[in-house]
Image (cartoon, rainbow, N blue to C red):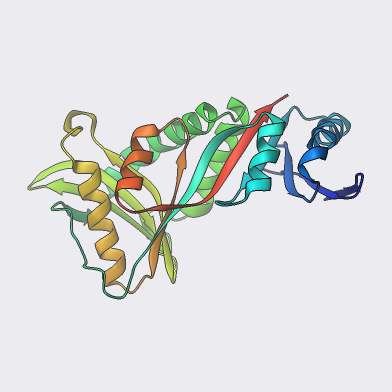
Length: 242
């Protein structure tokens, strides 16, 4: 972590071990001195030999928004959350979630790492870094495949027809969606909404207090769905290549 006092304020930076970029942690500089912050960030990036800057901005953080704008960073992803109220109805989406079979999991695992790596790359991560991070995530979260502790992996069925999948980390008290997919030949039928609603109902019935997820900025269709389902943005991630 590097901290520099710049004309009456603080700018905190660190080297992000996941992508090698510079992560802007905090900035107390007033609006009129944001140009100094940009100069300091780019100078630090040069010193540590990276061409990537990342930052996080929370809803309502006007100063954080001004900083990412001054940096010229673009939103790469958002962390979102759906909190379950005490009196909320447990709405199921009308699809059935069945535990993945070994064969279904092997097919999923083979394609999922490549797909996740591509999503990260599309959001601005260097392709080699995106591939390495995708592999690390799956190895860390699913070390024992379907038997990995604290993970729910389902195939979604419409009647007897498999139409998609859902993977949720069964964290307590708040669960987390790691992946949701609708098979290509079953899209535009509202099944994504149905899968998410059924998964949320399962989480609520099992005593979880809510459900979180990450959505990459290029995936505007998924983002629109999550907004409609009542998810709220917890934090936005920004990225700029120098």
